[in-house]
Image (cartoon, rainbow, N blue to C red; front, side):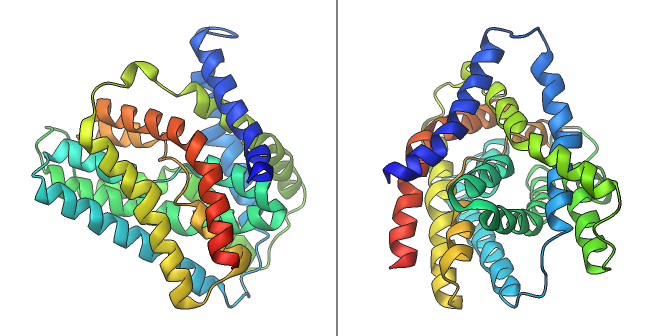
Length: 313
């Protein structure tokens, strides 16, 4: 476990460095908001395009890999829906709990997969992101529209929101473009692929700094049981579902180890924006994000170590 901790330590060091830079307004006020936009709209899409355009889709394991991740998403969603219904939790808090349970921080997944499992692990993590990012976005938009209805007074036209979630999301567009060109045999593309690869090399460190800068310590209040239930969904139900699905479908080795990473990382920072847009409890969402990032500093190396013992035994 010590070697795992050493592999992950630089990732969390970058997260903390980003948080300190934001705290002390270094290098200037508003700088990290600009970096966040740069990574979201350019650097991270370049990373996703560069990797999805090179993935070998002829591997027969891919269907099982996709099914494992989608089953885990479904099981975790059912768990959160059941808990919020039994406890009669109001819709804004319930939808924020749902996001905290089923969403994952793609940036941290890719950074950890590359650091712990190398280039092959990074490719598998990109593939998992290509499966889950569009699926989760569509699922959450539909779920939150149903849960909130017109209570927030905003335009909740489902077709319009789904179009926005898919067409205007640069991560989804990069995945779709990379996969499409790959399947048509048009990659690598002269100059464009080289530029994408160059941008991809700078993506992860910049993304991690930006994620750290987004941590909002002032958002942490008395979130009570709702946080622990959503954290249980994120850090226990999701990875446990993946491990059981891997056993059921006989998926072992590196694919299983990378798949389970999607259940060990904190929820996505973009969940805050969706909570504000669709009537969720944005304050609680900010607290869930911050607390999950802080928790994962301790839980992530332990969970990776335990998963290696369990899956490789």
